[in-house]
Amino acid sequence: MKLEESVSSSNIIARLLPPEDPNPQNGSISGAVFNITTTMIGAGIMSIPATMKVLGIVPGLVVIVLVALITDVTVEFMLRYTSSGKSSTYAGMMAESFASIGSLAVKICVIISNLGVLIIYFIILGDVLSGNESNGITHLGILQEWFGINWWTSRAFALLIVALFIMLPLVMLRRVDSLKYSSAIAILLAFVFVVICSSMAVSALLSGKTQTLRIVPDFSQATVLDLFTTIPVFVTGFGFHVNVHPIRAELGKVAHMGLAARISLIICVAIYFAIGFFGYLLFGDSIMPDVLVNFDQNSHTSAGRLLNTIVRLSYALHLALVFPIMNYSLRANIDELIFSNKNKPPLASDTPRFVSLTLTLLALTYFVAVAIPNIWFFFQFLGSTTIVCTSFIFPAAIVLRDMHGISKTKDQVMAIVVIVLAVGTSGIAIWTNLNGSGAAQ
Image (cartoon, rainbow, N blue to C red):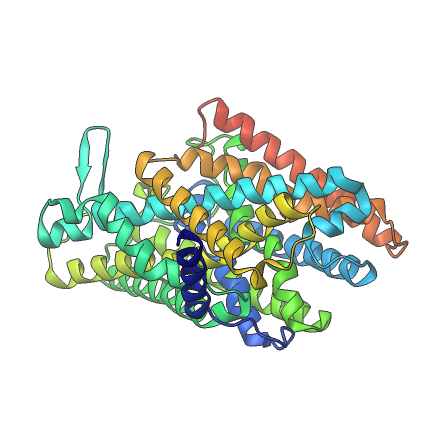
């Protein structure tokens, strides 16, 4: 009887899940652009204005462009060595150059990075919807402002509803290209945030209420080392390398992936600088590490309160739609880590394995986010360690190893520069944060 019930349940789940596409290499360039851009524009966008307070407007723009250029270089490294090798995954590509140690290093970094980021998404969603308490001060969430403090406006219940009715249907999709529509909506919501922020800044400028912009760093308030604490924010903001292989696999042509990556980088540079400039223009030195806190301030006009609500809701929905993209690579790497040496079918075609792993990850991130109210320092740690490894250090190391004999002297020099910059800036950022500095905090 129990066996029949189990088989029946599996059949029901199989019907609910989308069928596996028999032709997986039919993804579009626009779909790839949406997914890549959505991967990059996550929680880090809210910390961009705080980096402008530390760096100043001009150095801030320079750093954004520089990190984008380095990202383009390292993605090109990955695409070239993927085409020359036999592997279709990031871990497999590292295994070709550094054997099982390289593969294991990638899997561990991806799992730590993505799991941490997904938990942070849940925490921020809880803050937006149900508020939080910091230093004895209670900040009400949107649901509590609308309906008061009740059990059904609590963090645990609000996040449960979001997980079940928004995230669960999306994480159950088997192909990353299937997420292109939700990714497009997420990008649109990011543009909504930028437009509202810029409109408020222009309005404040016309009424003479804007703050004085800092063009260059003010070393009376920050040290040279403090400048390096901004690097993890940008590294995280441009880190989409873990999704390069699954997105490329559905495009079929390497040239299409390279084009999609460059278009996405241009979009993100524009969005990051816009939100950094207008956010800093609007709030000045009072800007918080999470600019959403500034929009949480009380407004004396109904229009102002409406804009604050729209900003917070659009951001919350944006994160909910980004969640499935990050979950996709996390699930793939955990599956590869556990079942790589076992004779198992692909994850997408193995319904029991796919469903059990997906539900486990969603439940884990939910419960940790409810139990831990604030892990922003962990967010800084990720940008200085695991994400910088998967984004910069590992692709550059593959070029230096050059198992396929395709790298040129120019590539070798560029790889060395990337590793030196990545290790140096991240090391200084970690040291500065551990010593309690960091002007953006």
